Structures are given as C-alpha cells and as structure tokens.
Length: 59
Image 1: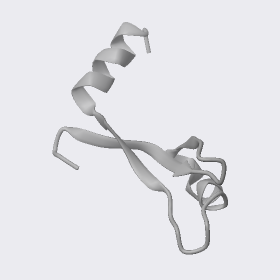
Image 2 (image 1 turned 90 degrees about the vertical axis):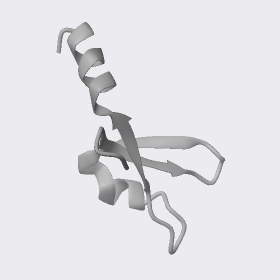
Image 3 (image 1 turned 120 degrees about the horizontal axis):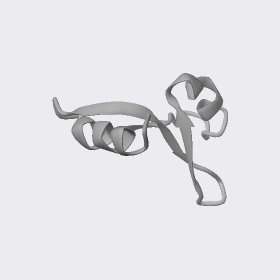
Image 4 (image 1 turned 90 degrees about the horizontal axis):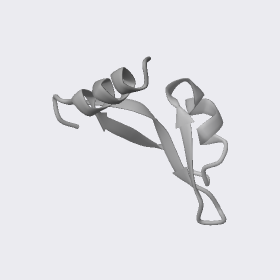
C-alpha cells in the first residue's frame, strides 16, 4: 500500500472462481467464504481518485 491509497474492503475468490467484495466491516463474513487457512485480501483504492468519484456522485 502506498501513502495515497486507502483500504476500502475485502475480496475473496469463492469455490466457483467468482470474486466477491465485502465492505470493511464485513471481515468476519468474508472469512466465512474462505477455505481453511485462507484469509480475505485487502482491496485498496487511490484516495484522490476515490475522493473525486464521491464528489462527482454528490456524496
């Protein structure tokens, strides 16, 4: 992770080879979809790009 990035959630690859995204507060749920010994992967976003997106969306 670089100084300009922030973590926005978690990703997992399920048994059917589909990627699933979980928001930050859903780590425990994401773990439930992982194989034994595996953990969700952090999803990162560029803060400046995310801020611009939220501004453009009126958030």
